[in-house]
Amino acid sequence: MAHEPDAPIDKQQALLASEVFLRSLAEHGVDFFFANPGTDFPPIVEAFGRARLTNAAMPQPILVPHENLAVAMAHGAYLMTGRPQAVMVHVNVGTANAINNLINLSRDRIPLLLAAGRTPVTETGMFGSRSRPIHWAQEMFDQAGMVRELVKWDYELRVPTQISDVVTRAFEVAMTPPRGPVYLVLPREPLSTAVAPRQTAIRPRHVAAPAHPDPAAIQQLADRIAVAARPLIVTASAGTTAVAVEMLAELAEQWAIPVVSHNPRVLCLPSSHPMHFGFEPAPLIHEADLLLVIEADVPFIPSNDQPSPSCWVAHIGEDPAFVRYPMRSFATDLAIASNAAPALAALNAALRPRLSVVAERIAVRRRALARQADLRRAQIDERGHADAAQISPARLSRAISHSVGGDAVIFNEYPLILDQCPREKPGTYFGLSPAGGLGWGLGAALGAKLAAPDRFVVATIGDGAYLFTNPTACHWVAQAHGLPVLTVVFNNGRYGAVRRATLSMFKDGAAGIDDGRFLAELDPSPPYEALISAQGGHGERVEQADQLAPALARARDAVVNGGRQALVNVICPY
Figure (cartoon, rainbow, N blue to C red):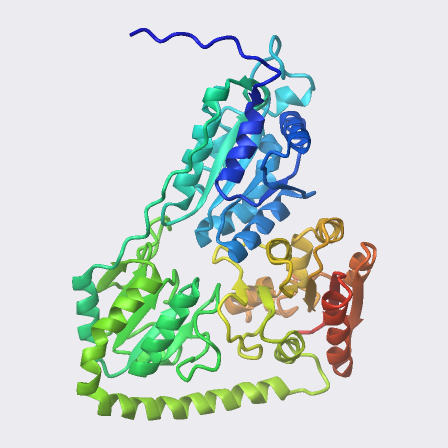
């Protein structure tokens, strides 16, 4: 039977494709639409205007004056809600500004719908055709090619009637494990076109659950753990859920296995857990006869430390081989593709019947590890109190811990020393992506505060990273959208990572003559506290150790009791 053409659309009753787009986002659980607009946004502006007249359900629009900040905020909101958010930017130039934090999301497997306009396709003859000189210069042969290596899926809207299906497909791909960002290009003409009512149906699709671990592989791993003399667990991101933290704590406690959180992005094990052995795999890794790597892309640095050739190595993770990394050469005797929580639950169940058989041997190992843990904690305490007159990173980290409390949600972009700032509760610590794109921490904190307004949110950040984060834009967003967060700047007046990397290679060379300061110095250091004061916030500068605790307390009170954003600029040489 021949398909009958659609009847003429009643433009008084029809929805614009842009309206269907935004309604589809809401149907897929999107809370916030982070927008950095340009000349491609008129149909989006019109859609939100119509929604105000009709009370149609749409995400909350959040104007963000920099694209990198918008993506970081979407990341922080997802970490609080577990629901992917949406960001829309201006064509190719906006996409370019968003790429830095898009890389972070990609490596952290964070779902996001990143949408961008496209310069109008037509030069004349259609509603929405080109009307500015930039519409010629901003056209690209392949706009999505800019991000294709970073996203799971990309698509360009071709006809307006496709829009609800395109959004549904985008979320289906983004949320299917391993999760990740997707990219949608929206030309102005189809987005401005009216769509017949029967072409606007929105039906989110069920997304498959993550794969469960192979039972045979779990049994093999359990067999190995039961006979291992010196097992070691290394993880970076096992604690993405409270259940995973609980399961890892049970495994480590029952079997007396030390856990190292190497370059952690989340809290994987409470700091007070007897098997919490810090953040560096040495020296334990040298002695290990079994190494269990759980959601860690780089469990150790091979050029510095690595297990013995006889050590048996197992990897657990959604993608235990990290197949999107071009080169990664860690030994693997067993790989288990699974989320951490179900894999650890299955492993604990497989190990329970074996425990009584080896209980005496486990008790001996537990006592030996307890002595090591006591020595380690004594060294941590000594470092935290060293140089009482000077503000070291360790001293500042300890002061932050005492000031913010255990319920605060901390977003750390490098400088915070977790040994000195213990965290006990899942979901109270988030670290920078392994990709290391700077300019993430403060934006993620603002997004978290937006999604969880009752939480006390803290950003700890180096002065170099603070400059990357576009502080004027960040503090404007905090004031405009009512997002009081506390920012603590570890201000050493330099790019510390650049200097350390230089000295690690050329300490005795020409670069070592000035102690590796060339291309790393950030003097003169601006008065960062003045930037937040200009946006109505509370700002302080701290140079003396005895000023630190009172300043942090005043800043905390400004946020918690006064509802104002606050920043403490701490001069912290290291």
